[in-house]
Length: 266
Image 1 (cartoon, rainbow, N blue to C red):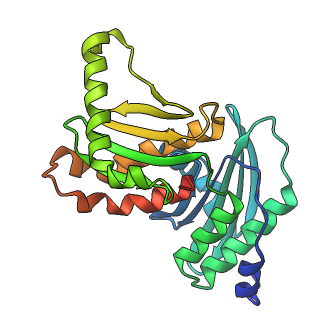
Image 2 (cartoon, rainbow, N blue to C red; image 1 turned 90 degrees about the vertical axis):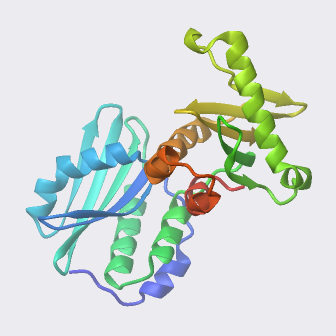
């Protein structure tokens, strides 16, 4: 049984970060599942975890699972809420220690919040407090190879970037195309960074889309690298159809802000 009293006060008092790679909140029944929130876990892995543990989750009223899965340790806490099973998935590196009491407290808070019909934005706030977005990136440009800047987010103090973001997007696209001409697209080598004094644009390309991150420190963390990959995956999942039939309308990509804010503090 889930005690629902004082849920709003509890939400306001959540200040701890949880040392895990990722978290997912999933509501499921026998016929369907809904990923309410997912951060730090690729969607493909999230789907695999749901398929793997769904029979045990649906077979009990509540419970906990701890399992080794490749290089990860997976923790699953699940509860009954009306006709649904609410499950919280955590993924962490296999050999990393974790405060399991904090994990259990966070799970109870999230389940109480969901079952109390707290807004999704408040649930997201709780999860982002538990796993904060990372700093160290001043700007993000998402550009197609024709030079259209599909999405950009620039830190407020970077006024010159803000004023010239269209030209910068075109420059990044042009220099990448030039490097491909020099290096050769079939060589397997790609331009990965452009240095500007003490800043660096880190560049990754997938299916003709350029992701350029302006880094404050070129010795960036493994977390930033992992978040870059997750952000790229979520971009293509959200906008696959728009990219195939791109007509120049950039309004489609405004909603990407919520994904960027989930991973990076810009």
